[in-house]
Structure formats: C-alpha cells, structure tokens
Image (cartoon, rainbow, N blue to C red; front, side):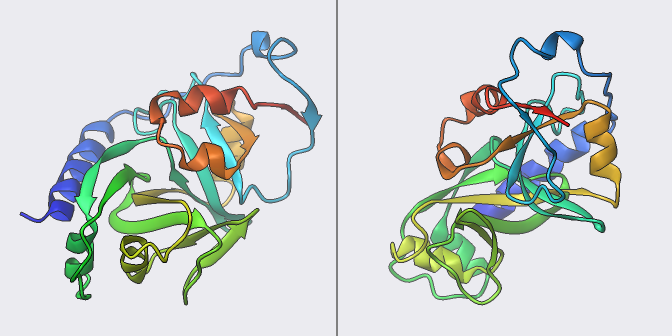
Length: 217
C-alpha cells in the first residue's frame, strides 16, 4: 500500500474513533481573566489569518489542545487547518505519482498533519507566500494555501516556499457556528506568525499559542 493510502487509512480510523465523542464546552473560567491575559483588543470582522487555540473546556478529542490556522472566515462559515497534529511522514515522490505527475529525482520526505475531520483525503499545503501558482490562495501576513499537487515537486526541488506544512483534511464551520463556539468559551483567538505556525515542535505549540491570548471586546 502506498504511503499516502496508509496515512489516509490511519486518519480515517482516527476520525471514526473520535466521532462518537461530542463537543463539550463550559463557560470560560473567571480565573482566566486578568491574571494571564496581556492586552485588550477588539475581535476582528474576519478571523482569516488568525489562530484558534482550543481551551481546556473543549473536550472533543479531534480538537483537544488543537491550534488551528484560519484560512477562510466570513458570513458563509469558516475553514481552518490544525497545525499541531502530525500523524506521520510520506515520500514526496509517492504524492506526485498518486497525482499522476512526474516524480523522477524527487526523494525527500514530507511530514503529514491531521488538518481536521472534514474531507480527510483532501490535501492542503499551508506555506509562506513567496511561492504561488494558479489556485494558490494568499490568506494574510505572508501566508498562503495551495491544494494543487504541483507544489510537491517544487518543494522536492527546493524551488517551492521557504516554509510549508502539509495537512490532510480540514476543520469547517457552518455560518455562525464558529462565532457561537467562541462565545461559549471553546476557543481563544491569537495572532499567527510563521515561526509558530511552521515550527516542528508540535508538542509545545498549544502552550506557546495560549501564551499569546488576549482579552477581546
């Protein structure tokens, strides 16, 4: 079985095992206010380009202690990629071959992340915007998303983006759903930057992201 097929199988098993557990959110703890918060800011009209950081009160294991980069957010809903849940590695040549593209000379491995429970077979590359091709969506502050497999050849040839993160699946919210979850105390909103998004120390990323939380009006 090809690398990607094995990873997709692992991902499907993970989401199936966790789907039976619902989202449980209690109100935000009063102890959170004032002691650890750094500054007061207004919640932006769109959260695209920001990080959602799951609070301890969010008990759905698919999102427990997750850090999510928001790719899209408007009145029609929201979409994001979890950036602190690596699930394995695969060869770039395997990804290219499965996409029907030439893989000769490409020998590097790429880390694969669980991007979220929606469409677990769909791949996305979150990356610095110094590289763009047709279909690349520039999000904010020098970060972009590409879902076309040609980016894997560029990464393998070292002509691609400076930094990147490959994710299978994504997190999605219906209109008004994310706003409701934030009001219920499920998520913190924190600023994103490439150092935090792309570093490979996934085990500490949630704690470092939480350290950036603010009081929002």
